[in-house]
Image 1 (tube, rainbow, N blue to C red):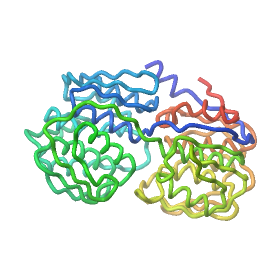
Image 2: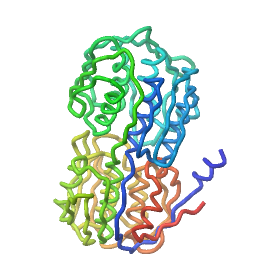
Image 3: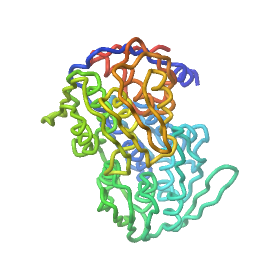
Image 4: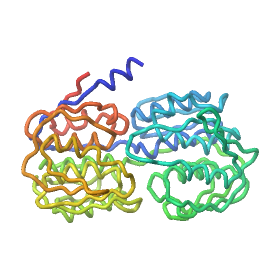
Length: 424
């Protein structure tokens, strides 16, 4: 509790005006490793995950596994997971309420134990993210769902393959159904499935365990159930959102940065917009090199589900566009409450107006330091980006949100020459 409270009271002091220079390595993907940790419940054999980022969310997911009876041990960038003895079907409220991604334990727990009790999950306050698609999919596989004193009690005497159409291509629902169906009787078909790279990584992990999933990364996924899965060693894909954040920071700062351990195909929507804005970058054998001029044009952005522009990069690119030439219109279509960073950017001098689900950004020459608050994970990254280019020293509060999704962000930025200090 003391460690958690200290993290919540931590802040960043960022002095702007420093050009970022050098090389930086992207960590393993947060949004890939969390469902993969949950999928370790599908086998009683040992699992080793390589390139597992050391994040608060990863720590919480490990605690969720341990609360059920499993064991999670970190050794550098490796996670060693054993779920041989799963003694409980219920996860503690205080863990689930910290992180929305914990909802993905439903599918593997149904496959492994036939029952799970879980409270409604928490996470960033960026808008409504209903779990009805998760429950609908699991019910199609034969699960029964009931509410019991604030808990979802989901059970199934056996899971049977089914044809499931998702009304919305929910990432979490696709993952939950894939995991539950991997050990169900018969074949499951998910139509209008999410297509994110993290879905592909999860499918690859399950297939390495002996699963039979094909079509991941397209809108139709086929899962042929198998009787049992075995242990494996898996390397988590690079974090495309972290990579995109560093690329945007380099472009905004006016420096030259080589962002390594990236998969360029995962960044196509961002790179297309940066090219349109006149940002200079090139793909190299070991990464993407950004040559920031500190001068770029305004571009319009519309967030969409993959393969469209990712909502998780909306806040960072909006922060970059506060100093662009011209006027940009950023439209958020995925979450209805994802402009909370705008008021904080306006404290720093940004010229932004909100109209419905769009932000109209008029570029200005300079931003100024202020005391600001990170309302959520990506908003925090946006404030750091703005602070890197602002006049003076910006005081960024509530940085525990940032620690949820960026591994050692302050250390990495200091290695590039940024003046950023963590203050407890």
